[in-house]
Amino acid sequence: MNNQTDVTEFIFLGFSNHPNLQSLFFLVFLVIYLTTLFGNTLIIMATRVSPALHIPMYYFLSNLSFLDICYSSTTIPGMLVNLFQEKKTISYEGCLSQIFFLVTCAGTEGVLLAAMAYDRYVAICHPLQYPVLMSVKVCVCLVSGSWLCGLVNSMTHTVLATTLTLCGPNQISHFLCDIPFVLKLSCSDTSLNEFVLHVASATIGLSPCLFTAVSYILIISAILRIPSAQGRSKAFSTCASHLTVVIIFFGTANFNYDRPNVGYNLDMDILVSVLFCVGTPMSNPIIYSLRNKEIKSVLRKLYTLAVTPHILPNLKH
Image (cartoon, rainbow, N blue to C red):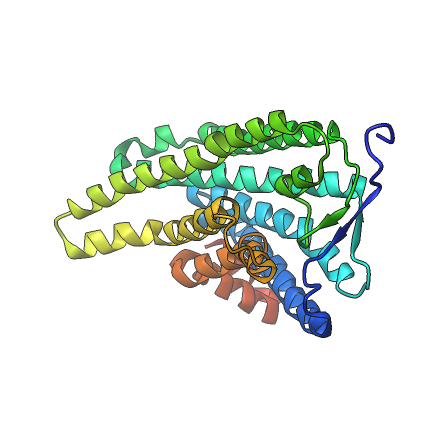
């Protein structure tokens, strides 16, 4: 590694434009992080303790919540520490580790959201075949495949990043390490890295987005054919939360990675990345808690259980 690079650490320039607001930033991101941990943990607990939620949709949701906890934990803790340091740094090894986990979580979440869209498509468009098409084995394979896609993609980028020669400067105009930022600092040929990045954007990024879009076109078409208004409302309510999460995730991801470089502004760049890397993991449990009646019912029982522990047996019914 020392033969490849003279850079042993990176300096983050994110939030450096507002030195007097570091304490406020710390408080805001701490609240966001605690809210993310608390909300997603509640979702996982609810799907585990209630037999009524032992169905594929909530199996995917619990995995999404676990993924969001990992996602936010990759960036926020280090950012909170740096907010109280005059020189905001990360080691070369730490930067590569952050890239690995960040890319793993982002790639896995995109594929997992596509798997959840398939689940909703089968439930709405092929309800009689749902038990077969979404069996336990199929669900486990879809979740495992999502993680495998994210891991393979991340491992590829991380290994390629170690081959780059970094001669300085070592300043990253952001609050985290990501592949495009490291490529900008390289003084060696990055054509292979950029090619793999474009291929990954198409396969791990664009493909799940298109698959999800097609799934919801078919879902909405099927819902509109339901004769009763009550039936249409009930069918749409089963996928409204997931559709909202999908729009937020792919919308912020597209704006974060594919927006033009014209009129670059550090504050705007930071804001967009905060929405994608920090805001999305926090919003997911809030959306599902507010829009999903089953989740709200179990959460109310969990709250009552916390107040009166002797009613534990009632949670099983």
